[in-house]
Image 1 (tube, helix red, strand yellow):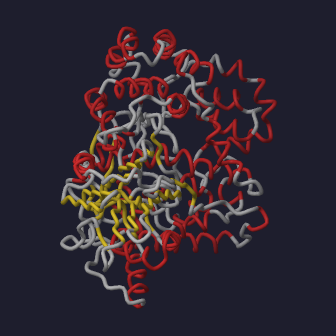
Image 2 (cartoon, helix red, strand yellow; image 1 turned 90 degrees about the vertical axis):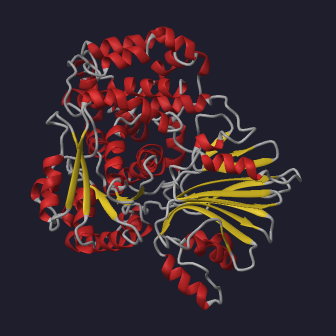
Image 3 (cartoon, rainbow, N blue to C red; image 1 turned 180 degrees about the vertical axis):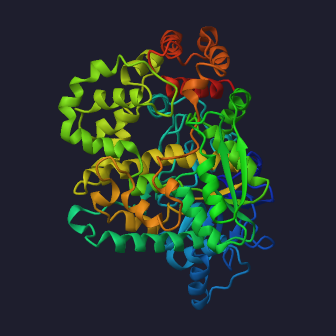
Length: 617
């Protein structure tokens, strides 16, 4: 695992290695073990390394035998040993056991078609000295980030936006489209970034840049749901057995390392399944959980059931409200563009805890998106049947007082009835939308951007022919998971020099999931039907039959109590006017309605808090 950065000059001048060194120095937390730099005329590449495989011999940049193909790489390639064997049989000579070297020799042999052969997570930069071109690529899920600025006849890239901003010429103007998207999602999906003119590569994207000035983009990899007629009709028992086998193979691949590996254990079936399988492969597996004083949010009891069953070396940390007020400014600053999933705080804490014991941790991202774990998927099926009738109840649902429980019934009733009669994609977004267009218009005024739902519509349009629920899952997998869950796990873990691996986001697991019929995903109000059946032999009944879990926190209650002073300080009208981004009046209204329990605006207020903290860094 590493942080990477680089520059390609397209104006005939040599790249400045000092500029790449400055970017790399901003990535020390991603790679504290060593630094590397390569310079060759118009190109310079830099790397910060967190040593995980071949601790002594895996320094980057890595070159082919003749030095004409040079690679820097952030991630892990789980099939590197098999690929190495193929390449050695084709007379390539390796100097290390590091997975990154496979990219150099593999590109020599296959060119950009190499990426189609990889199983793993990666954001890679390859300098092809023969063709004088720079190739940037990310894996099909965009597990690892890569930010790019192409302008002034130069291409600059880095693993984090904060590092890229150290490169002269990278713009600092806020992007109105990104601001609009952030207020809608509490995160910024690719290709947008908070800075105008900077983009981040999306799932399976590839950028090719040449010194002469051309820059081209294309998608090289795209896991997609199968058309209706191509779905499997195998019996559920057979599918459950196959899924267990595929998960086992994926976990085994994700455990390969020359350093200790543990598992984030939340108390739900995704992380529980990973822990159960990993415990059969690793003697005395380490597991890590986070909890809260509030019983309805605390999931440690279920995590302990799994830990005791498999005799793991289990560790816990507790997040208290008074700690959150101190921690939030630090965590918001570590996310180098605005980000506001409130589970960022518990993920930060559990990452810090895990790093004290291991260098790598497995996490359950992707299980919900691939196997139908969100309640919104069940709500979509219900709305398709009773949408117009449910919409009539929206005025009544809007009058229900707001509570502090984990996504209370009153909150769900409001969201469901308000959106029930909308078209499928718009309804799905409305179930989760942070701030509606009218409120965003009030908040941004002169900074209005494009409709952020267009990002979802573009992904949706690619899957015509698949079942509606599979199309919704694909939107979440290819847009929202990248913007939210993967960004959260990457920044919170790498801030502590911890590598997080996500075995559900595996090409073989995804290929299996994409062939499943609706009844294997969601049946009535039951979610993750097949996944629950597959892991039932591995986990306690309380975990298998329990509600969806995750490192979510009691933001609604805390923003009416212990976090309210911080919210009032950060969102003070004078401070907002000094920022010059948000209009103070609608912010004050949202705060007042939430405090009076007229509505649950906790996700919106959390987002405004994080945005304001980021603006004032």
